[in-house]
Length: 570
Image 1: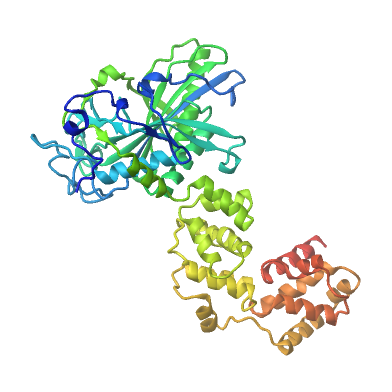
Image 2 (image 1 turned 180 degrees about the vertical axis):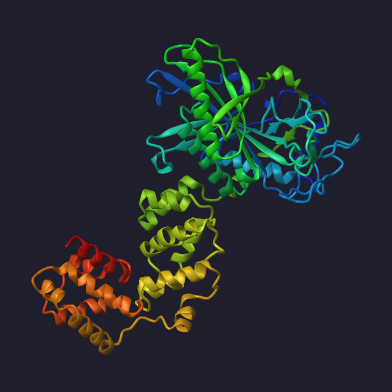
């Protein structure tokens, strides 16, 4: 059923294409209020690059890059933008194609409500102005995977404009930077051309044709590849938080075009070149660096730089010419006659605004304060999709945040990276990791045994730590008589080291703890062992630093390693 705010063109405009600013106000993004509209479209009112920020990141001390991004993010909807065809990834070729997707004569597009809602929420998350009325246009060009011969997009009156993304040291930048969002528009995706199946032939897969896209265009506020890479990564996180797009560049659900020009500070801007279809953050960074270098070499050699579309060759690390850059007249933009103007009810936009989840910046500020996390810890958590939620779920099982961050970042994530496994809450469930950390913190097992249990969980053991401990017999030894005998045997075996400890070389105590941990296969309680050894060697009550030296941070393994290092030094 069509909502009231998705009206037919005749209802919205009386059958004519009038300026829509007489229709009402516009809504600002995540923190804004409803504000009065302007009489003309902002795209026609504001220059693209009116007030550049101060110069920074100069190359060779005098060349300033000017960089803007055009990011195409597939909308995470069940159906396509203008048809009821299902969206899919890696489905058998040409199995999700409707008559509209294949451009059969007489078929008419019908706008997806879900796509519009998700695009509005994304616009609000970007703190952009969402307009109550927008419209669609036809962008004409020929390519075999574009069956209609044109792409339906929003060239003249986009859904939203004038948003922003803030970058800071917490994102990995050395300074604060606000990057403007020129606009967010809805458009349909093309099909896919397959060139490598049969030599000399190009095959066409129309599964992707008609899938909804959000084209997010930044203002040319970027001055380096590093800024661009951080911005793309942050936009990925925002799209995933809103759940409007997967943002997976390796799967093609997010693609990036980059506009790059170079000029000498104080002189006119250079010609702009567009780098097309970059499908990873690394490619974005490397392509920008290569294009900046190419343009500088050209200017220093008094060679012209022409406005053109270029590609990036990953194998050579260079950009190459594809074609001369098209301008708007080349595309013969015209109003889309088969679609009404999109009229939005302000109450509906406000309702979608209330549905926004906690956005990345707010989440980062909250978890740093709530859990006393460092900048690096916070950045690591937020750098993995779903890891913040996983971390908070483990904390809710009882362990301290400090213990959870250590086991999550250093132990779990480190082991996954070593095995080339992408983080997922399903690899080791939050309940499993929570039970493991509780077992270590409560002294049921040593940290060394805990690491062994974590390895088993990563390898597919679905049991909680308690069940694994009981089955393996890994419960930590607490019997003082057993530990007392282990300490006696070790002291009698290394009497020279006992004398060294008694003469003041407290570090050697860690050697004994490590050897006993090794002999007990990690089951001895290192704290209790340390206490017994000190008593038997006639040492005074330990200080905090001595305890850390003797016991170490890994339940015996660290102390053993430390003792061996000291032995080598001697």
